[in-house]
Length: 476
Ligand code: ZN
Image 1 (cartoon, helix red, strand yellow):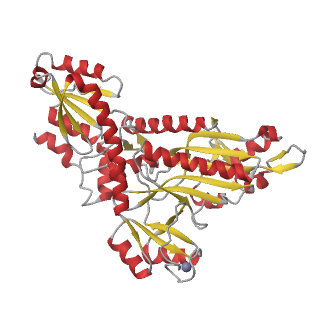
Image 2 (image 1 turned 90 degrees about the vertical axis):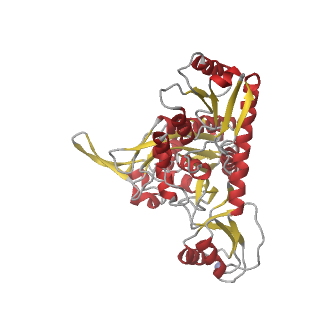
Image 3 (image 1 turned 180 degrees about the vertical axis):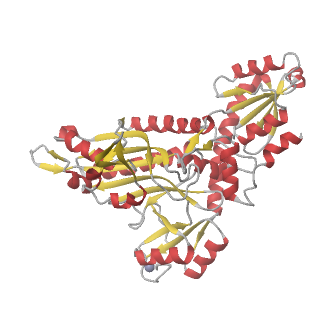
């Protein structure tokens, strides 16, 4: 048993040190390894399989709305980057290629931090007529941002993402697409990741460089810090003017297109860890878990036990099931499947077999139940659904219990200091107040939610008439 305990002991308790807990989980659940390139990570099979499931589900949802996948080069010529101001926002974290083989390049190439400029350059040639619109393209790729401080999944120098880039004939269509993708992200987070999100708009200060409007989904992590989990931008025709992306309309008049972009990254894996994890490790929602059920044979050396375990795997063929037939002790296997966040564990030993039953254990609540093998398939299915919806309800309850209101700065400062979470407060719309709130509390404006509450008539900071209710919080 001493050895079994060690696996669990190696995790720092989340209440003692949340950051260390997070690092322990990503390592012990074997999601990543560090690499020889500082700030970059090796995503191991258990981590990559989560990303593959995210990809699969999102890609399906994208395509249902008419989106098609393409692939752009990873290099951007410097001259192309300079066409639009938005590169200034990325300049401090851009990596450059200056040599091709042994020869210095005539023009240096940036390793894409995001691909607006490449898509715009491409669209300027691709789009001529109203018949060419809309263009609804997406690419799955990695991007590079030379971050100074990095953390696995949350901030790394190279990360995986998808970036959608669309071009439309009218401003209305672009706005409709921007909102559609934001809602698609939000539904995905809630339905698949069991992660509730606040849907809203970024303030001008926090919006994406070059965007007319940035919409965001914001989630609350277990430690009370916010995490921006996906964004969708309406560019209007700003990029179109810089890159001369024009089409001739039905009257044969030249018009600028209206564009959007939207992205979601491997950061989301960090969010899953920090929303659902506990002191025993990762807790994965069944709908995203690469392994949904782990069958652990007990006393597997006894005759018929392993055979029964594999028989049950076949019975449960509707789900993603594995049998842990390694020669580790059952206790070790239990801890390991908990560490990896596998939603349901099935324990089967000689006594269970004799009684035609198995023990099911929920990862999220540790609750155990004995079920007849005749009902196993049905019970596991029910249990996976229950775990999925309970996890969303629990995360929502946690978020709601850590969402506060402030009507003056004293209570605002006190709340942020003493009760980590979201703070809802009214705002006059000036960046001066936004800056001051950040200076006094360390909290940034997360979003102006689409669902507005009216808490008071005046700005929490300056007392002038308020225009919006804003969610504030310290963030990752
Ligand atoms: Zn104000």
